[in-house]
Length: 586
Image 1 (cartoon, one colour):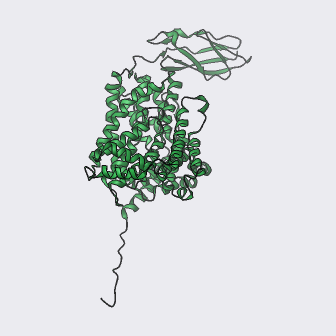
Image 2 (cartoon, one colour):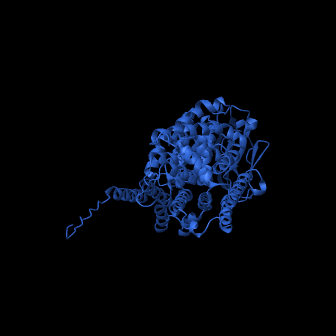
Image 3 (tube, helix red, strand yellow):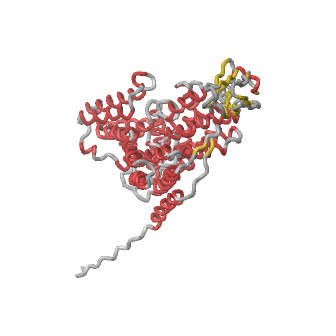
């Protein structure tokens, strides 16, 4: 043995790639932040949407966060913190508001979902459920994929996809531990967890219970179009699309992440032994099941029982958290194991989403995008809206993506002869399947906790999955939904207000009444036209029995006022025109 031992000098390789993406994010923020004013966006009614200083800064911040999240230049939760810090430093939003978003009820819902998963794991319920499922699907890894995906999708029919992901996650961990006991990620692990996140989204579009976005979209549809979409009316059209997507996503995972092993030899025997070793169900397991099913029941019944409507779902799921600790199912050690990286990631996602929304940047983007499509073929219009919402739902809350885009799209649709139903259903379909970024949906972030893949791997898997979704949606919009009876086009043209002459009178004289039906052209009965007016300050305007009457309430008033008339048909198509009324002094 040598008398002296010399250790080789450790060579540290500088990570230039990481440095590049750090500065790329900062550069994108700076170039947008310091750029000159951007042009206004103008909606079909002529309303201008100004991109303010704060809105422009929010866009820049959004680009920075997207680069840092995708390439993980720092932990994704710390990028979330950076979102709040930059808003405060650059006065994009009030500091208190920017950081309060990290405590949004939706973030707490994630915490509650994670705790449910922990309770399942600690009590052994996940192992019990995993073993039962593996005994059912057998030893083939392809069938294990399929069994896990179908189970996840079916659970989203009755509970929120976030809660489903949290409940299924420990079960998948238990299954994965039987496949590989090493620390290194495997193809099977990537496909299992990424696939779980994808199918949780695909399943959640089928019923109103899968996510809140469905109720929001139906609310907009009713208020703008005046028609109701029922609970089962939604599922009738969304079930075949969701089911097809689950099967196709299974096939995609088999191609992209083909398991290293076709079968797990001896798995059934091992599972039978492990299942027998668990013994009978324990009191802690029963208590956990009672708490979880009661929580699911209350959240599900909120859609049907008016008395429960006002209950916040985050509060309901956090009651389960309290009960787990009160009944000593979980302990302080479990509390300290909550994945705060994921919680901060979602807090940052909420903060940037609200930032884009509240600064008007999101509305500006939506109007600009839809303005491009205003003269397009109906199919291009529908798919264009879908593509926009698909992009937005990866970046902000899917409810916000719907709230920003759907009202404008529903207003534009009748002008292009597009039925509003196909716009709403296609928007809901893509809003539920954010396959590109971890921040797009809670199941994506929960799956990331498995440490089987990076955010870059998730993004690369999301590209073909998103293309697949658009192709499937195109087939449904073009062929399948019309065959099922969904209207996709309408045969109607907008009403047109004919020229109404301006009027000028002297003090003491009266304006002529206007029989409005004589000044409208439409392909539908003119009795169905709804007239309204605006813009008058000193003149008194009345429309009675479809005749407009103008009075001068202040004696001796002189001047000119323009009164805007608006005529809308039953499908929401409108036209407007201004008429000037002048009173002159003698």
